[in-house]
Amino acid sequence: MSFAMSFASTPFASNRASTVGAALLALTLGVASPALAQKSADTARISVSSPMQNVDTHMDPHVTSRFFSKAVFDNLVGFDPIRKKYTPLLAKSWKRIDPKTMEYTLREDVKWHDGEAFNADDVVYTINWMRDPKTRFRFKFQYGFIKNAEKIGRYTVRIHYNRPEAADLAIFSEAVPIYPQHVHSTFKEAVRFGVDKPIGTGQYKAIEVKPGVSVLLEKNPDYKLYSATNPPGNIKRLRFINMPDTGTQMASMLAGQLDMSRDLTPEDAGNLMKSNPDLRLRLGQGVGLVYLAIDGKGRSGVKALQDVRVRRAINMAIDRRAIQKLVLGEGNSLPAPQAMCFPVQAGCKQTVPLPRYMPEAAKKLLAEAGYGKGLKLEITTFAIPLTTTIAQAAGGFLAKVGIRATIDAQPITAYRKKQSAGRIQIMIGPWPGGGIPDVNQTLSFIFDTPPSRDYHGDDEMRKNARLVRSTLDEAKRNEIAAKVFDRATTQAYFTPLTGFPSSVVHHKSLSIGNLGLATNYGMIAGDINWAK
Image (cartoon, rainbow, N blue to C red; front, side, top):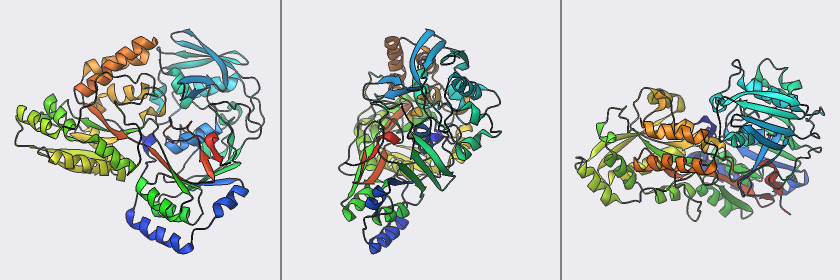
């Protein structure tokens, strides 16, 4: 049972009372057209529901910070979500020297935002800084496979591993922004770099970072690394404004004070579009999902949950299609996850289908297991509207088969304590898929977990999860991965209930492409344009 803080920027966080009041206020102001005025000023205004603290994804591991990081900094490689291929970025080519060594040949025409030349020293510095025992950031464990980086020439770098890592390119394409040695090394507190002087090589410069308030990005006129998967956006400035209150976001959209609002519910988006026909809704799937986890290990002391028949009955009692409809709203559809991953992620393989909604069959399984008269259970979830709503819906479905489930919605700190204490019976929560186009992070964070987070106790599944991460042969890797995801389904340890989509309401003057659909933010900076 796991949860990643990169989902701290949670979609669909709605406050209904303030929504109605603020939206009515906006309607009294009238639906103006300042969006067009902002187009002439070449500045797109975008609301963000979670406070922005930093444009450095290591120091502020939220989905919004990942968006900023990819706009301001470049990675060694890029990723094409359509063809599922890695593409050149700061590195123009690469080769695997041996199972534990990758060599990158770097571009020679890249400059940092301050005009200094980029070279191998910056890559070696970044990697070795990340691996330095003195360096601390929340998800450093994800980079444990890296030993160090070595400079071979001015534009050639070798990165050495502690063990083979199948997802290395996925991680380097999404989660390793390269820093300028001549700037980053001057900060005694690395957290200040992404606020005070976030110099990168990316196609946008961070002109102003006001933690918890706003971030202003401006086009880098000297950028040269454009490609089909890294397109040039045609907007000069992107201004992100912190608006945690849903009602304020809606009012600002209706008053023409915003061009885009992220994280509104489909219901709120529908109401906005009825009030202003110039607004559009775009849902993006990304690789995040909301899932159900059951204590098959028996840590919570509930013997019934150690019986696979009971766990299967719980799964069969919940209508996943109805859950997804609840999340997406009427008339909206996105592909539902068929395992604890999405096909865009390498290693996402399964042969066993998820259980169908069969409440009568669930009742029979409960009776066979000796619980024909029902059960009392507890569902732990997170104190955010989306997961609480899903947990309540799941509780309603369970009640129909005789399982009386109470809901305990906890803030993240309290959840962690309850998790470590072994008191979680059933968990419903979000998982961002690791934020990379590979199943690596899911395997390490959910299946191959440390004792404090292990609620499945399945050594076979844990062993195979480790093999998937270290197996470089794609066919063999997929074969082992299928064993992992199939066992999670057959043993009813983990079940995806719905995708965790990104929701964007935007003025028709904006156009958003599809290249960001494989990311948790749902878009990338270069794919946001003024509509032609």
